[in-house]
Length: 263
Image (cartoon, rainbow, N blue to C red):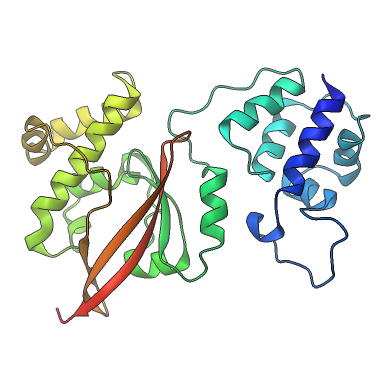
């Protein structure tokens, strides 16, 4: 364990965060130093303040893998920073999940600051990991699903109810966009990946998916404009702007409702 380097690394990452970055309400008192306090990092990590303080003072015990993972989440570390944290502690970092449920720290920091803006974070399989309240009001709660149905592509081709949020005239275009996105995810992750398994399942279950797949659609680099059928507002023209975290294969989409029409 490299105590000095570990202590310096923890202090630097703690100083780089603000309470709002991690979902804490800023206090009214003036802080003597920038960044989070030690007790705030300890609270977010599920460890005692004394334990965390001793780590920063170069006199703590060797943290367990569970403690290191908790501190990495609390400090919103990137994948590379997380591995470096484990290395400093003298432990092997567990392998990264192929499509982790945890939102990439950088994207979470941006999402936390968007306030009332409709935005959400999705992974390469089209699984919604986190939404702002405004996005839930616009699109519904897309994070409530379990199993394969977490993928919006899977729901589109297996659940007719998934299409009610889009005008019928747009169904073909939306279907091709979903297939192209899943094709890109499968190509990037490889033949033994969850994405490829999902493709195989959809090709078996949905003749429509299989037919589109055979045309080899290619995903656009941008989120294409779309129309959403809102239960109260009618048809809304929506533009989506994407911010991609390449390290975690996740995307933050910020939606702008450009106009409202009568249904």
